[in-house]
Image (cartoon, rainbow, N blue to C red; front, top):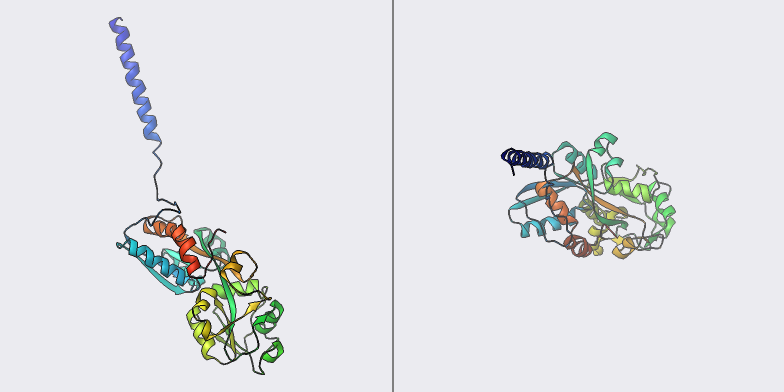
Amino acid sequence: MPVITRRLALIAAVLAMTVTGCSASATPAPSAGPTADPNAGPRCVEGSITASGSTALQPLVEAAAKQYTTACPNATVNVQGGGSGTGLTQVLQGAVQLGNSDVTAGSKLPPTDAASLVDHVIALQGWLMVNNPKVTGVTNLTRQQAIDIWTGKTTNWKDVGGPDAEIVLIIRPASSGTRSTFRKIVLQGQLEATGQALTEDSSGSVATAVENTDYATSVLAYAYYVGQKDRMVGLALNGVTASVENFANGKYVLQDYGHMYTKGQPDGLTRAFVDYMLSNDVQHKLLPSLSYAPANQ
């Protein structure tokens, strides 16, 4: 091959290599990112995060946080209550990394704010109406009976088969996801009576108030009720009892999804913990043991 031809071939080869190299560098390789394999164990990431919000979801998130940090001792996951509205507001403001909520962000926040949050559905949960033990003879209410009681039309237990005693309503504050869910599903949007009523701000305080207030009634997360059945009377709704099985099969209507919100797509420890919440260890082992149903039926 003549010298000039060899030089031209060499120059062409160098130019080809240069173009190929430039093309490769113009499109970065995709990031491997965190694993979301539901069969994988916890993906340990160092750091500290805080979750706040729904007290109905609090036992689940606390138990998952304990399992995660036991497996990953260089991580800290703080869990606080405060109610669904508080959790959504705090994660929106950046005060916490995770906002736990019984309701969707769109039902509590302005559309623009809600659009900035990412929804991670972590559980299917239920609630039930509970009575003080002095309310004898009442183990089931129809939806209409519940509406009449909670809107103030029915004010004496004798009108639904109970004792001759005035009904005391124990309600949750406006920020409560439990209150919003009960109003939507059972009361069908109607407002609660404001007469003979007390207000408690968490599932734990509701349980205590029902136990200690004669002839009281309220609504409690099923996960809280299961551990303290001897302190109060749980009511069936429309003849169907609350149970994990009846949440999963849809027979019991007072149920909804539990949400874990992040501001934008999560990363670091927040991403790792969300992935863990959606893993088989939590969805198919921890949830049933705490009286929740898996998020994906």
